[in-house]
Each structure stands twice: as C-alpha cells, then as structure tokens.
Image (tube, rainbow, N blue to C red; front, side, top):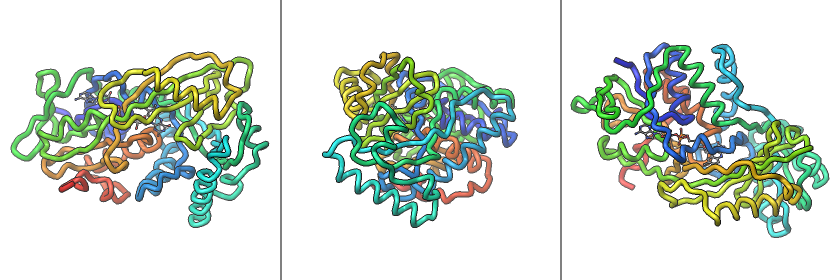
Amino acid sequence: MADVIVIGGGLLGFSTAYHCVLAGARTTLVDRRDTGWATGAGAGIISPETETRGLPHWFEFAVRAGDYYPVLLEHLKADGAGDTGYARCGLVVAATGEDEAAAFAAGRDRILARQRARGAPAPADLREISPDEARRFFPPFRTVVGAVYHRHAARVDGRLLVQALQDAAERRGLVVRRGSATALAMEGARIAGVVVDGETCPASRVVIAGGAWTKAFGEQLRVRIPVEPQRGQIIHLRMRGANVGEWAIVNGFRGHYIVPWPDGRVVVGATRETGSGFDPRLTADGVREVLGEALRAAPGLADAEIQEMRVGLRPLAVDGLPVLGAVPSVAGVYLATGHGPSGLQLGPFSGKIVADVALGRDPEVDLAPFRVTRFDGT
Ligand SMILES: Cc1cc2nc3c(=O)[nH]c(=O)nc-3n(C[C@H](O)[C@H](O)[C@H](O)COP(=O)(O)OP(=O)(O)OC[C@H]3O[C@@H](n4cnc5c(N)ncnc54)[C@H](O)[C@@H]3O)c2cc1C
C-alpha cells in the first residue's frame, strides 16, 4: 500500500511526487502521457516580475515559486539528477511597432511601479533600456520602440526538468506506473485508492495532477473543477552561426515570446487558444500566427531553419489561478492543477506545497485563494 498516489506525470505530478519521497512517503505516480501534455510543449519562461496580467494573489505566489527554483535544483543535484536547462539568461519586454507603444507604456509603468513598491528587484536588475541596448541583448530585433530588461529572468526545459525529477524521485523509491487512472476507490467519504487500468491500487492519500484532464474526477468527488484545455502551438527554430545562448528571452506585447537556447534553438510561441477542447493539433492558422508574430518582432530570424513544432494543452482554470490543496468532500484527496500559462514557473513550488498539505505539514503559504471551493456556487 502506498502512502500517496499521484495521478499525472507532468511537472505538477512529478514535483509533488518528488517532494513526497523527499519527505519519506511511499509514493506511486500513475501517468498516461496523453498527446498534448502541456509540460512537453512549454516554453519555460520564469519571470514573474515582468508579468502584467494583474491576477490577484498570483504575483506573491509566483515570486516565491521563482525563488524556490534554485533550492529545488540543489536538491536534484544532491540526488544525482541531470541537467534541467535552467539558466538566468535575462528577458527583454519589447514593443516593436508604434501600434504597441501605448500598451508598452502601460505595462512598463505597472512593472516599474510594482518594483518601487516592493523595493525589489534592484534598479540595476529591472530597468527601462534603450532600443540599441535591446538590440544588443537580442540582435534579431530591427525596430524597437520601447523596452524593459529583467536581468534575473530565467528559462527551464520542461522535459528535462520532469526527467530530472523522475530520476531523483525513483532513486528515493518512487514507483512510476504507465497507465490510466480511471476512477478513485472510496470508503464512504474517505479515499481508499485509485483504479488503474482495472486494478485497484490502495493508498491513504491521492493527489490529482492530471493537467487539463483533471476535471474528469470532478463528478466522483462531487466538486466543480472548472479547468479546461487551452491549446498552445509553439515552434523550435534553429539559427546557425550565431551565439544564440547569449541572447535574452523576448516578451512581446501580443502575448508572444522568443526563447533562445545555447544549442542554437530559438523557440517562438505561442498561440493561446481558449476553448480549443482536447484537440492537440498543429493548425495552419496557429503556425502562421506564431511565425508571423516572431518575424514581425524579430525580422533577423527570417533565415532560421524550422526544427520542430509542438503543441500542448494548458490546464487553464476559469479565473486564471492554480487549483491547489484538499478536496473537502473526500478526505485524503488533493488537487494540483490549473496552472494555465505559468505551470513551469509555479510547478516546482506548487508541487512542494501540495506534498506538504497531503503529508499533514504546514504549507507555509495561505492556500485560500487557490482552493477548489472558491468555485462553489459559481
Ligand atoms: C505552448 C506552451 C507554452 C508554455 N510556456 C510556458 C512558459 O513559458 N512558462 C510557464 O510557466 N508555463 C508555460 N506553459 C504552461 C505549462 O507548460 C503548464 O502550465 C504545465 O506544464 C502544466 O503541467 P501539468 O503537470 O499540470 O499538466 P501536463 O503537463 O499536461 O501533465 C498532465 C499529465 O497527467 C496525465 N493524466 C491526466 N489524467 C490522467 C489519468 N486519469 N491517468 C493517468 N494520467 C493522467 C496526462 O497524460 C499528462 O501526462 C506553456 C504551455 C504551453 C502549451
């Protein structure tokens, strides 16, 4: 019998499972690796300080999550796990057309006002820069009408991170099972285990980290989980003969971005197709949108080779916030989902917090804004 069964093997599931085994719990993770798992497609940008969505409670949590990355990486290193691609490579928020100037000014003012109010990051680490400086940080730009630079912004490779978590967790005894969790086994209002491909696996606690597929358990749990798939299409370009690894990440003003990697990849994305349903396809319109926006912002990428295209289904909650913590209707069941476009930023920390709650420890953050009960009556 496991102490904990985790359903889902994306970043949220593996982070939760790793923190469970770190705490000494006997843990099993069940994963189906659906086509369209979000972690496999994610761009990997970690930069809460330049986020302008203005979601309440999101920012404080995201800053804690960003600070937690180096801590997790130390744990993984000590456990002999491989590279995750994590690096603080800096990020330029840029407006590249006059039509974006007003939106840029509003975003810049919000970013810098928050910096002043918090007294962090230091002015040298988050500041407005000139168009020439922006082009030095990211040479494929042509026209830049306004830019802000954040020195500590980072990137991570979601696939490598999940592999590192899996390797480290397996060394500590995690059991990984490929399969589909088709139902929860209950004893009255208490969890008793998980039915995996027809076999009941007993456990006293179950964490559901099923990404966009999590909602399927709502009926059995008698709880509303309004998390839906939001399709994202993203393209990996390759630039030869350029020091791509020295370039900064770019965040544009139409929700698009560019992430350079030391191996010469330049990842451009992404569509945000709310209402896409479970339809993880690359489409002509999606590919046109992603390439069109990348080349509009950075004409210097025109000669890059197309290496790969990916598509993922972001698990997006109706109010844009993660869904974390206990399900009150069934004792012993916990949720870790709903991270939408920021699951790679938040995932390591969210997994730690949910593992803490599931193991009866103090989660060190107030989970009230993220509880599934916030949707009651909506
Ligand atoms: C194009 C794109 C770009 C992105 N860029 C960024 C970014 O720059 N920064 C950022 O922070 N975030 C980004 N994200 C978001 C991030 O990738 C997601 O929020 C995060 O990966 C979600 O992880 P997850 O573990 O919740 O879900 P997933 O990675 O989708 O994993 C869920 C897993 O659960 C499994 N599962 C579900 N139900 C069952 C079941 N019943 N039985 C067994 N297994 C089950 C699935 O098969 C899947 O393997 C991006 C996403 C996309 C698509």
